[in-house]
Image (cartoon, rainbow, N blue to C red; front, top):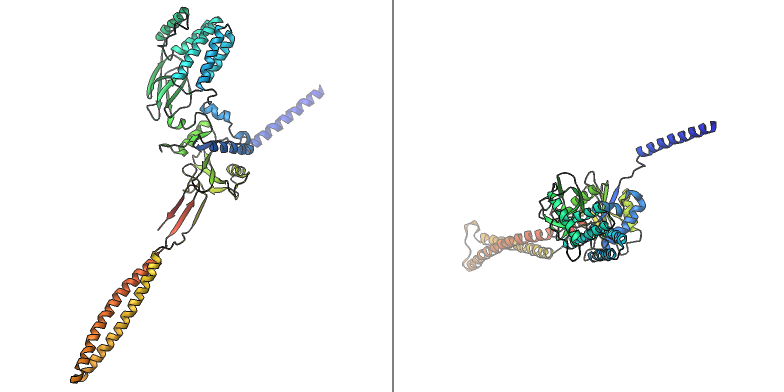
Length: 496
């Protein structure tokens, strides 16, 4: 008894110590790491993008473990992908029908239950609905053969509650089953209905209930109480499957513009918007909120026509709706190595940089993976001058202007000399001798001509010198510029 009491006290002490340790660990953040999800951004049919996404997911998982949501957890939120084609599912129904008529009712029922699960994963439409209706009707007969009348009626109601005009084929069903089917139709017609109002953004999308088309959004449907699968869609894609528990009048709004960016394969990928109405940042934030994660890592593959390819990752905070960090690695070439993805994963998780990861500062307006191709490098410097035709033309004009000014000065000197000789001939009020009149007159004429040439030289020289210096000195000059060199483009911004 004493030993048992001592053992009990020992267990109590250990339990208290363990509880205290758990509280300390939780308070220091050692327990419960931030939940994280990874999604690719771009063409979700690109096998290279999806391959890099899977490889990068492995590297991230090595660092954060279960904090990174799994593929199954992702699909639990957006819906599972199809595992069979419509033709394969149709053949399953035919096989189940043959099993039923060969008295293998249990095998038929098991196959039909599996088929109905597969049908929920297929895109809605006439083909899916026909297969669904046939499967439920055969299932109703199988349940009836097992004397499970209520379950059999429920299988028939699953068709009639959505398509009350459905008719059993007299070639495939006995008069007894057809009579039961018509009776259930009448009962459902008198049953209490609830209103299901469906809206979508954008409006005008087709509404499918259990795969059957029931109008377009905005739509108001009157249905009997129950559980339904609802999808809305257009030719270019469908929404997630929405499970509606119709217990009272219900309204549902579907963000089709966002939901159809997740591919039907349910790969962890956001299709790059084409219409420009939704931004990648907006869709990424919506996905983060849907997945209930703290951080969403957005991965993008950029392959320019010239130069190396780049893989970029941006960390988006679901709480602040802002990028917390962003960087990229170059793929291929001498700079690439087998551990580049690991370095990028380390940067995403810890923020630690290396010479392999090119970092983008999220606090600036630099190009982002969430908007544009990631920049390979961002530098601020004085843009180097680029000489054009203006330089040689400016030099030539400057030289021409200097020569013209020099000739103008020379002409001015000679004009002044001739004018001085002319004035000297008439100095003191005397007149030149008759034999010198012609020579003195020549001085005057020469002074006037040289003065005119001097003025021309001044004008031409000044104009040529001014134009030449302006062309020469301003060629290639620009203010401070920011050059952003990325995988897909080069942009220059600044004051010019």
